[in-house]
Image (cartoon, rainbow, N blue to C red; front, side, top):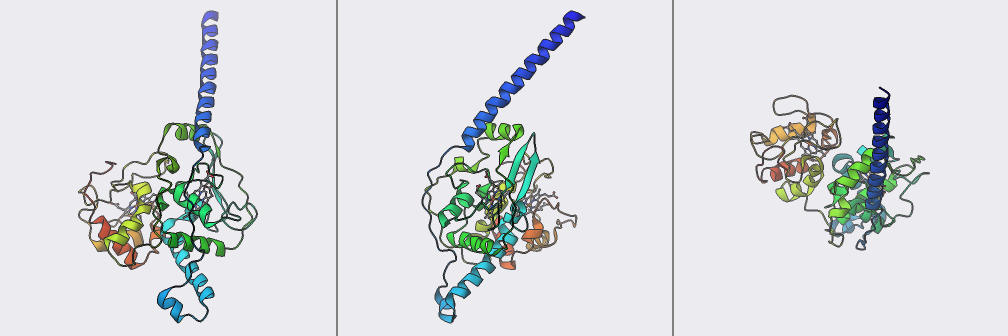
Length: 316
Ligand code: HEC
Ligand code: HEC
């Protein structure tokens, strides 16, 4: 009996030493990825964009009108398509996405001008890095999942920033991001998790988005924001990481996807959160935001989804 107890004590001690050692190694690996330094091109664009063409000709106060129009377009993008508030909070003053010691203190920081702001003095270049490259201002990797925003044009990003700057200042300091053991494990072992590792940081960005017409070109542009969950080929399937997320639907024209859907079914899904058979779509699918897209935007998305290859559900 004594011998057995001694054996047990040694085994437990060995397991503890191994676990501590492994978590130390994973923490070092995760930190070295998070602290990787990136060389990113210099982006520059006006914030806000000035009026041009007919709008300029028709305006008696071009600067004030440009600002007002940019705020309106930026608010539409933020509230209907790009979802910054889903993570950074409805007031953009920052929010904790995950705050559990074992997982991590994963916070989307304060984007307003109040105490705790991380965007004080941000230039167009800093916004470009944060939103379209997944790189922090200090040049190191960011843990923000920027993959949805890579194809935003300069004009759209400028509108988004103009809108964010028009929001009331909120005092909220959530402190820096800290990874716990679970995050360390994910960051150390999944090379695709942080988008900065997958990008060509010198690739130029489009200055203007596609023309606002209900065709596949605009649809493809908007659909980038669906790819984070529905996958690069939109076939859906299980998403790693979030246990609350239902199996993601297949948006391709496959029989396991939207083959039998009509444009009306698709419009209803985004506007009312109902599937073709009338059942409710989970709120984890951000349809309440998408419901605020214009008819042109929703019809453009549908036009695009009809052109993509049919793929079996989950075959990413
Ligand atoms: C899925 C959640 C999520 C969404 C959506 C999101 N962010 Fe973030 N954002 C984060 C997290 C988390 C961080 C902190 C990352 C870090 O410091 O490692 C962050 C950081 C930032 C930063 C600071 C730079 C940095 O990387 O630390 C800026 C600026 C920013 N976000 C802007 C935006 C804008 C603009 C949008 C909408 C176009 C947006 N974010 C959408 C989660 C999100
Ligand atoms: C945050 C993750 C997420 C994003 C981003 C997202 N979806 Fe979804 N979507 C889901 C999930 C999860 C489901 C399945 C929900 C359910 O089963 O209740 C779904 C279901 C759907 C459905 C219902 C299909 C069916 O057969 O039930 C449609 C249509 C859809 N998404 C379209 C889109 C479009 C278009 C976009 C981009 C504009 C998009 N989604 C972005 C997570 C997402």
